[in-house]
Length: 234
Ligand SMILES: Nc1ncnc2c1ncn2[C@@H]1O[C@H](COP(=O)(O)OP(=O)(O)O)[C@@H](O)[C@H]1O
Ligand SMILES: [Mg+2]
Image (tube, rainbow, N blue to C red; front, side, top):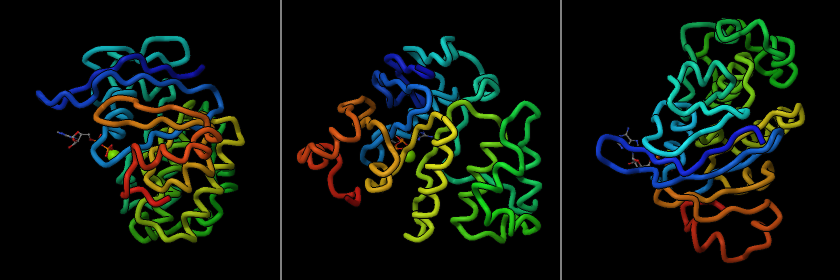
């Protein structure tokens, strides 16, 4: 097991958002966090990386308690969040965005990320702001890889993208998984989730209300209606 979240509670001000989230990720696994808008998926990722520090409970990464550490220290250990709004530098070129993030000890250099993201190689001299939405997402993931992550957390990586780009990014995430990367995926597109994941968790009102293997999830006719409702495209 690479990551264990134990009964984590999280607040924004006085709002008690995470009400005891427990989950785990094994090395090399892709797990999803599913759930309706506002369920607490993004907040769960933020609590893991210490941006919303757990008020109660623990996060254990590679056998060591990391909850309570400042988020830069958690990130430095290899817990990497690719946030929803991508956060690439629009005035820097693609390659500058990548090299800025590079760490000496990373197994991921420019060659490795360009192998997975050939479009970024083609566009390496373009400014980040000149990229399409899909290319910006690819750059955000590629940049995360350059930081030497041990667990990669992707928050809605294909949201708002055209189906053909979605397929491309799914294939790229699959290639990253094939290197042995552990991945937590938050995504509203269920088809994307079931194409990639080993296991799923469903979050509702700041709690995990379901967990199951991808096969069990696909075989359970009722689970989508019970927990996910209409805002998830099946
Ligand atoms: N920065 C914030 N300040 C206050 N409340 C927030 C903040 N971010 C999210 N929330 C609230 O926390 C709850 C969970 O949000 P979030 O984790 O973003 O949900 P999800 O990612 O599942 O859509 C929602 O009710 C949301 O309104
Ligand atoms: Mg969210």
